[in-house]
Each structure stands twice: as C-alpha cells, then as structure tokens.
Amino acid sequence: MEIPTDILPFFQSAGWYPEHRVALPDKAQSLIPEGHPAAMILSTFGGLKVGRVGSGEECAASDIIFGLIEDSEDAVRRWNDLLKTKLIGVAEYHHSHGKLFVDTVGKCYSLGLQGTFCFEGDNFNEAFRNLLLGRRSRPMLLPGEESVMVYGEIYTVESPEVYRY
Image (cartoon, rainbow, N blue to C red; front, side, top):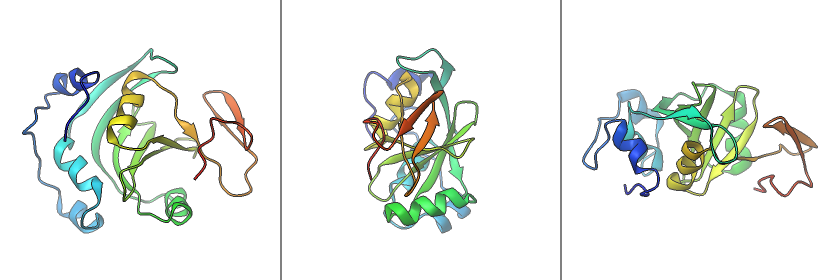
C-alpha cells in the first residue's frame, strides 16, 4: 500500500515502514469477507497509532488507532443495508470518539459518538489524509431524515456538503 507523501511522516513517526505487516487475529479472519479491503488495511497498519489531535485545515486533526472494530452498532447494520455493502471497522479516531469503517470497494465512513454517520473518502488515502490533516467529513442522512448536526453546524437535505449515496 502506497501512502501519499503529505501524510507519510505521520505513519513513519508511528513506526510504520513499507514492509510492516501484522497477522490478522482469528476474530478478524472470521469477520472479514475474502477480498475485502479491510484485511489489507489491518494487516498493513494494525496496532499503530498515527497522528495527533490538534488544529487542522478545516476542523480538528485526528489521531487514528488501527485495529478491528467489531460491529455491534445497530447504526452500522442499517448503513450496511442502505449502502448495499459490508462495512468493516478498521480504526478508532480522535481519542476514540469515532470509529472508521471501510466498505467492499474501499470507500471510508465514520460513526461518531452521537451516532452521526459521515463519508470520509473514496479510498484509504483520501479518507486518512482528511482525518490527519483536519479536513471536514461529509455528513450522511438516513432516508426521511431532514437534517443532522456535525461540527456544530446543521446540515439539511439541501446542503451541498451532504454525501449522496
């Protein structure tokens, strides 16, 4: 997996190097479908704590702790159904106040403490760049939901920032 040069120092400071690999725990092997991008992410970065919480470009930058997040959230099951995919949790972020998920094609999403679900990026590099550099996520609305609050702002169905799935 190639990491973009602008965020590579975050990974190197955490002790990551290109040949770094960890074995997936038995639990992960049983939860992750064959060919799912979560397996590569967890074997490449599992156990690392990358980045730090602090000022970012548009919002607070986050730390990221890589590890399997077991799906026990009703919200995740609901989003699996809506997105017609299998979300696998690969990390916690921002002092473990949020969980990061990757879908079957590599798109990344987050679930915050308040149950807010956001789109983080079309791929690993985009999502983790946004989190480490403090770029805003794109809120997602459930069917029938009129608005959601993220970053202390209310986003409605008309807001261009809302991710359309």
